[in-house]
Image (tube, rainbow, N blue to C red):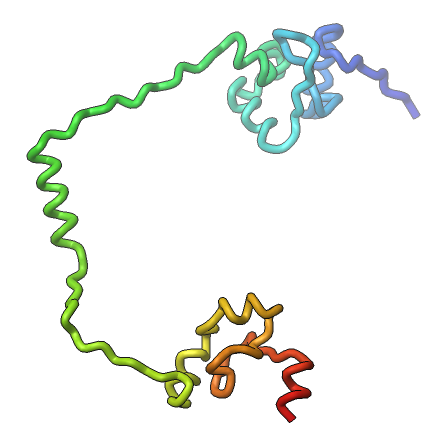
Length: 173
């Protein structure tokens, strides 16, 4: 069996053989290539990075090997300008129109409407219905080591997290 000649990790030492290898096997001999600017940082040719590099160089192996730069060199040699957001002052009429639009969309609250008071300690059906999906008194539940010993509606509560301590169960009997 014929043994392949190993190519150098640095593509600049033998760029013609790297190109021949690519044309023969449709891939580079290594998964990483050296930065063309600093020649010290390696750039990975795997996954999304490979696709970006190949698209930028039109899949030309010579351009890929000679024009690809690392992230640090790209920031140093090709800085991007940050766009400043222009502030446009709002006129008084625009502000008034916006305020009126917000006021029109606010829900109306009737402060004089008669309130319905439900006593959950005495009304079993209402307590069961309201506690089906949530704990009405999480402050008591959380402050007492996750137990419902001191809760006033524990008798009719149907919450899934309802739990009593061993001490409570002994004193209850």
